[in-house]
Image 1: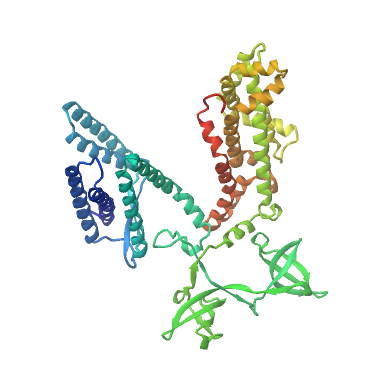
Image 2: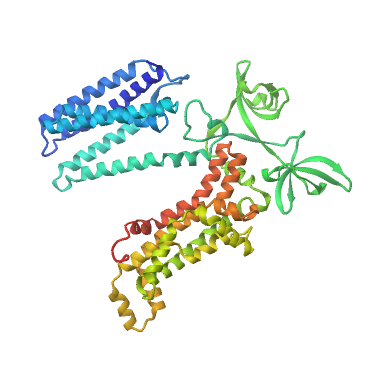
Length: 578
């Protein structure tokens, strides 16, 4: 048995033991507080089983040595994750299902149920064999990734205290007759909350990674959830001074290259990154020297600890430092190797990642602002065109009577069967002949001509509205247009909201359309900017996550402000939200 398998088994033992231990505590509270309507004998039996099995698993998992695969500092709680392709997951699921069905078969109440459980176990065994052969055929394997959570005992005791307090509250609530159902509701809400926490982990990782330094992205101790930043010291470097200047109306940081005639200097741009390397001439009097933010390090020399900042990274790989502390050595300089010092860090967010990500954008895009404006214009016009055109066409098919109405509706539905690849070339030729190339017009103008699926959706929704409302409007003197605008349209707001959300999401994430019709980078939307940034700086995870976070903020705001209409419109039932 390999070290990875042993680590997996012992990790399962520890976590199952923790869960059973918490269950035993909860059952003990119910027994101690005397919950009404409880079988005390059965409760004592379940308490003993949970405590016994949980304690045994904790002892096994804690005292049998586990190899983490790397050096661990202090106390830690094991974590494990299985990395495997889809057939591997199916194989693991089959093993679990076969075991559970065999156990259920042993505890079946009658022979018929017993046969059903064993038949299910046999079927899952067949699935497992097929998954194993599939995995072997694709030369895949099941890998076990080992990790650890550092144990900080104040935090552990605080969390256990909160759990115990929650259990006490649940048991006390169960004692009152009026609140006997509260326990189940609290349990359901806690389960939903736990699910929300689990599914929000990727977003939390995205957000925290956007504030991390590079050294936290490849940490051997696992994922770093709390970002830290290295302290810096403002330093006026006499050998390589940095100056503030302006280039095409933009504030830039430059370094001197050479002196030219007329009292001017030829300077080279260092920041922003999108302009790095560009050279231009400026009057000497317009240059203002600014300090560089140099990283601070800590180390030990001759048994004395010191703190110093970087003066210069030398060609032989060593680092020239200037001492900040202790005070009696302040200003002294020493040469050290990078592995002999440690960065001086503090908990904090590296907001600079966001500005650095924007600085990599092309100059003509205004640090990415052009991408955002183009995307907002594209999404806004697409939503407007889709909602107006689809609602008008759907109202006509649902309420107006004209020759060939049903046949035209069926023809429109048949267009949904055409793949996008079939109509791509004809559309390209049409827009090319119209002179719309290198613009966003081919992307948002077609939305004003209605889409088959949205028309079908709204037509069915209009059909649920009673005809009496329309007849009453006609009696009051309303024509078709006024009836549609003032009576019918407000009644289908949930459906319109759903279509608007779908259209906004599609326009926001549209990558292929701009790639086909637009050539100028300044006219591209955010989806293109994401692809451009990924191809240029995709290896820098912190900057990539910072840019991704900025691009998802509008979508998140849309969800939070429109979730009411989205939930109302999902079922698409009733009388249009009346």
